[in-house]
Length: 231
Image (cartoon, rainbow, N blue to C red):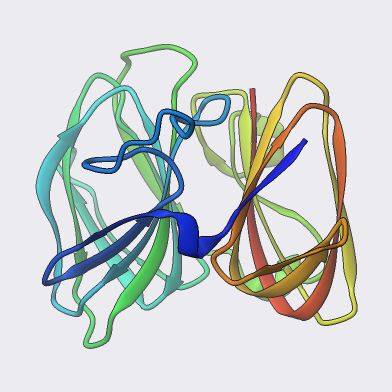
């Protein structure tokens, strides 16, 4: 089953520095039918004004993946880590038994990003953080594993039987993905548009996939796809 989530139908929040759209219940947005998808709990589409951001705050027992779409985000945490993640690249924070961090747009222009939360397989453990560059050319017309619970994928590590994948697709190209039985898929277009099983999806639309399902994406306009496959 494929349940398309149009960008215009997402939950929203806005203040003087943040314009957020929520694929699942989060903060003051609550929809009992959108509490997560498998172990995927949060997918936020955030636009952060220049020289602003999330002040220091705490997390625990969550795998937090940040995919930067435009601009850059600067991370700093109570473990002593500090790093700047640019558009197209990814950072992962395993909150473990507890961590404080801030996410700041230190740039002169706005930053847009996806923040994805996946519940860990086991609670607790030492927190951790890491970031990597993922050149878009390396995922042209194919899937690249950005974060994974499988060490063999040589991706950023997460503490769950899950994968976060990315691909770019030119107009006219096609790309398949099969969600096996017993697993859950969720994807969002970071940009462009595709045709999927006869439906057109545009930038920032998403879809939840349940059960054994083979998806065929056909590029309409050059597209960028982010996909989570999890238990």
